[in-house]
Length: 472
Ligand SMILES: Cc1cc2nc3c(=O)[nH]c(=O)nc-3n(C[C@H](O)[C@H](O)[C@H](O)COP(=O)(O)OP(=O)(O)OC[C@H]3O[C@@H](n4cnc5c(N)ncnc54)[C@H](O)[C@@H]3O)c2cc1C
Image (tube, rainbow, N blue to C red; front, side):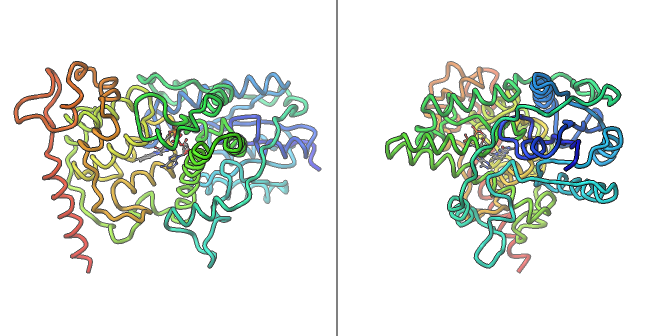
């Protein structure tokens, strides 16, 4: 049994229900907790101030929680393998423990850490933690990965669900003083500006409060009926907490199961709808695990090489929430102002960018990653490819949502629209859901719709059909 173990924190920034940390504390006298910061500067295609600010807050909270246990978070910066090697030498650790990260970058680094441990002659333990079921454990009858959600979810739901692990109460003596740590990061570490968005509160405690609110206030029992309504809180708002592992998935699952047990039939069905969303998350992890090429290419090979003739100017109007489509602009402004967006709006805005403006889904995918506090490679890629009609989806490409009808259906009173697009405050709800008369803007200072949905829908279908024809 090693005397000292390094616990490498990654996307598991909590002390409760943390698989690797729990096992590390059982296996050594001393656990040295470490977080390795990335060393890029100024600009990054896949993140931005909102998510980095949330990360900073999460690390601060984690460091405080470790402090109360008499431990000390060691912060380093650089490539994880090089930094962990240095720390192994400094602490004489006999093992590195971590929770697995299923995306290609995490996976690549895990291979390097495993090789490092072999070279140093120490133990290496990677645990499944951020999902109920690791990608390799949910396979078809012929041991193949699923390509479609419904059969995947049936299998996923049928598997036994592990119980949560207790909160860690001691990591043993803190690392010696000569083991140095960088200060906790601020945005200045990456040379990033302060976020303009008002982001949710970081840390394990805040995440737990959000979970309690969703479950104990009964929101979860109305989720099945209300989840597509973007006004007010109708969903759990836990995606950023799952993204950074502020909550253990086993604990969340157990709370859901308890809520279902105590609920009448309709409530039980609602909880199941919620649990199926957690399965979507793991489905996309599995897609990225088995098909990492989706980062570059369309999941459905039929659509690889499809042209996306949308312009940069059109993209900019979408990105700034000034398309003249109230529901689209409301969603984009919610994103810009909070770093989050309701799922229904993510679908509407993503479909609008790809099907009405014909911009490459990869442009939207990257923009979302730069803005989202919950930016998750797998779910974001999956959501974008689903919306673009190129993804792991049983529905065909010609399912194109009409933004005017979506808005009438899910925001009939215009409550969501008016919250995020104040120019439309005094416009009667009924007229928010149809194109205004030519040349007559809905309100002073609000743009006319930048395109005609029906025309662009036909254009989109023609682009897809032509590509299909050419590939025959
Ligand atoms: C274009 C597009 C991009 C997206 N990008 C992301 C992203 O970067 N990060 C992210 O976590 N989710 C993403 N989603 C999925 C979904 O929009 C968010 O998970 C959800 O809006 C988060 O709010 P919530 O926690 O209140 O969700 P709830 O409705 O309460 O759902 C509970 C949890 O289930 C998971 N979940 C729900 N819906 C989905 C879904 N469609 N796909 C995968 N997981 C899901 C999330 O972890 C979520 O927290 C994206 C969807 C689309 C269409």
